[in-house]
Image 1 (cartoon, rainbow, N blue to C red):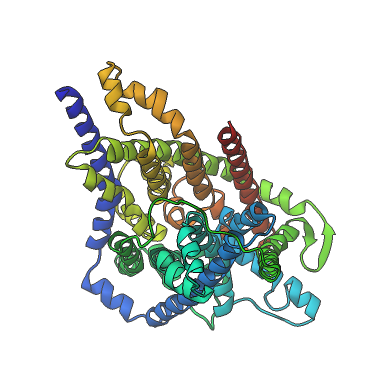
Image 2: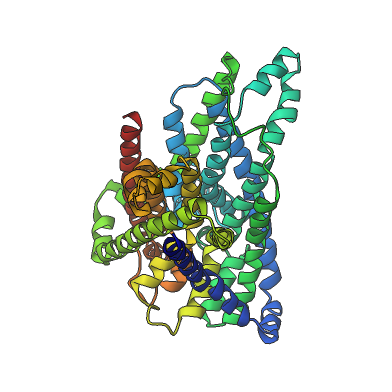
Length: 529
């Protein structure tokens, strides 16, 4: 017994040390590079204050729009009796499968820059998507799926009994919404605001592709510029600034209590059968689906148009040119990074979740907090901290540094998925196994893993898909290493080769869609057994 207890403690300590090395120490090292000279140099720059204003205004505007659209979409699917909910859900989350910069190229192709877009061609006017509203629209497309999934997941499990009781008491619908629905959604809405705001203000893909001279820079673009100039002190200051909303979001999520009615759902909320509500839901979901598909369709058209938008004849020339530019090598690199992150991240997340959920000790609380800390660290900040901390280490410039960065960057959500799932598995399994003389490892492999297999598949897909399309952390880490496919998009943009950028975006979309579809079908088949 004592030997087994020591073994568990050793594993937990090793996990804690791992997170100290790959999360806490790099961030502290980044802070150490900040000095008064860097602060003076940054604040004296003419771009500093405008970049703060640009980042905050675009992020706030896009966050509000994303939240409103997500709430309306979620209520349309969860509270009305319409058909095709699975189809609409698939379309609403489709933008999650491509990098944020791909949405920007889709908007360029659709709306145009100085008459180069489809709408400009149709309307006969030189419309430009560059600037404030172009960045806002691109950011909404990038962040909407996350906001939608957050609100939809909580609405699906709301208890319907309070609504029935309110209806019996004659409480009007508006009062039910303000008295029951809003308190139930309060914490989710607060978390959603900070999560979406953090996503947008730390993203550089959309601003990089859609900013112009009149608009100026955002903090993320300014940070990359400082890194390229090897001014790690100034970049570190911006990194600290970008950490602020993420840390606030993390703190709010930890401190604000859950305000739902209960953890037990006796009856789901009834869907409205009214004709008007159904029509409105169908119209809203259809229009939103079209708006989501238009930019994606636009960059797909660019792939197969010979010389967009001058010559729209069908051609494979962009695909051929992209492959000649080494896209197959970049794709292999991305697959290596993504598979590494999926396998390593899933195993690590399972072990951590098991230790914190089912093998509690004095350090499991600290381990749990370290496991979810990465959710408060934007990709750009993590990438910069890795550059500073690991620059002289043997793993810098190798596949491992990018794989570790991806696994750590996307670790929190899969970890929490497994932590919550393991909490629902019979807590007496290990005790029964000990009574029967069965080792804990056998219980884990033969009983617990099969029970949580579906969740493990979802975790692996989450790591894989996000690693395939991320450009934040890897943009700082990848140059000395074999570069992933997503960074080929930025290279094509610098060469003004939009057809190549669109081709790469389509490749990432197809791969991620196939992986997501296969795992969804496997999970659905196993769930029916």
